[in-house]
Length: 235
Image 1 (cartoon, rainbow, N blue to C red):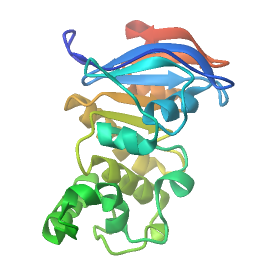
Image 2 (image 1 turned 180 degrees about the vertical axis):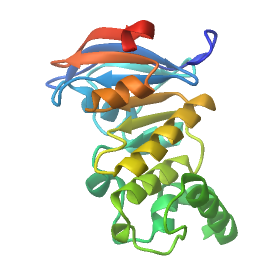
Image 3 (image 1 turned 120 degrees about the horizontal axis):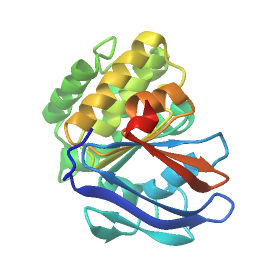
Image 4 (image 1 turned 60 degrees about the vertical axis):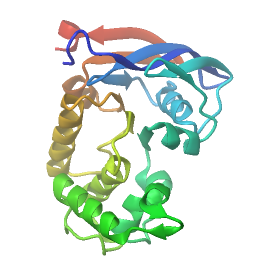
């Protein structure tokens, strides 16, 4: 678990969206994994999408490192350093007909280019590092993403959001549709990112996954947080 004095990175207060969730407040500290649990339809994913900027809020406030932020679109979220692995990698996360390398660098082209020209050397070097670090097979930027296994596609999605270190990482069902071996390596990756100080908001339908990874768990029902579990409650 994160050290007791670790700073609050993401603080949300009174977040509301009609028909989705109401009066949601919580904090995620540096190096902490906070789980959002609850049945499908409880409002977990909707909260995550609103923090990322994919859905509009009707009320509440979001602070990042103690500074109030406005997030009106995913572009705002990405610009502020909020990264989100969506629930469906094929519909929302990856362009399956594009190569691995392009999928990873797509959100970062403005940071890779100078006067409109992409620094290919830097791009190739960073993509290579990520493929190696995350154990993507094959370890090449060239194959079409759609030809990879589910586990390797999910690792490419992680690489896309770790190209530049985010300030907050939101994971919505990070091991959906992957085999046992890939699950294990994704769990190790999530734990190591948190150990390196990254604040993580984790959403999962798998109770075992949430209890095994999260330092604190917020349980949602019908758009509200009804319980918080921490410490011995998670055992």
